[in-house]
Amino acid sequence: MFFEIKDLTVEVEGKTILRDINLSIDKDEVMVLFGPNGSGKTTLLRAIMGFAGYKVIQGEIIFEGERINNLTIDERARLGLGIIYQHPASIRGVKLHQIASFLTKDDSKIKDLSQRLSLSKHLDRDLNQGFSGGEMKRSELFQIILQDSKFLCLDEPESGVDIENISIMGKVLGEYITKLKKSALVITHTGYILDYINAQKGCVMIDGKLWCVGNPRHMFEKIKELGYEKCKDCLIRKST
Ligand SMILES: Nc1ncnc2c1ncn2[C@@H]1O[C@H](COP(=O)(O)OP(=O)(O)OP(=O)(O)O)[C@@H](O)[C@H]1O
Ligand SMILES: [Mg+2]
Image (cartoon, rainbow, N blue to C red; front, side, top):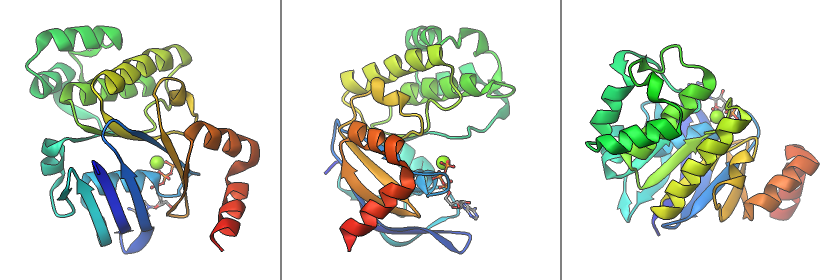
């Protein structure tokens, strides 16, 4: 298996946030993660990336056959894990073009992609400093593509992005994932991204637990129709 999580329990500041998470994602496979606010979705991505403060109490995170639990965030990034943040940080004094040149030596790639994502005029600005919500998300997508990670953890890549830019971002991301056979774990509330990426699996996180792996489009329709509370009822019935 390309990416696997086994029985993962994660604690943040002494509080257990995720419990007994199991999931697997194949090479060239995209899984979408749904769930209400505060259910633990971002915590899962941060635990996968190895952020400080996300303590693995139990379980394993395995990437390309290697147990990565004890690797630092930069070691995981070097292995091929990348993240788009839900709330990206701003860095004063570091220009977007400097980050871009750090991530790739291919200047034509930087030029083409920045044009496609309407970021050319922002290349000279400090990273995310004063960027609008949508510009920040486009800048995140720009960086993760230049980084050329093998496994993409995308935390609400389309949130705050206007409808035209969702379409541009969606196409860029969809093409990138399909052409280069990337694997991804994608969090979405709006579901817009499902129109652009070919996601094979979906799952729902509720109260720090993962439920119900299935068809993401069907799942999203049911969530819209019935809400997460009903989803929870149904899942509880199923598991007892
Ligand atoms: N450092 C922390 N200290 C205390 N609680 C935390 C900390 N980090 C996360 N939590 C709590 O863990 C829970 C899960 O948070 P998380 O950000 O993973 O939710 P989410 O599913 O991504 O929600 P959203 O859809 O709103 O982004 C929340 O109740 C949050 O307040
Ligand atoms: Mg979140």
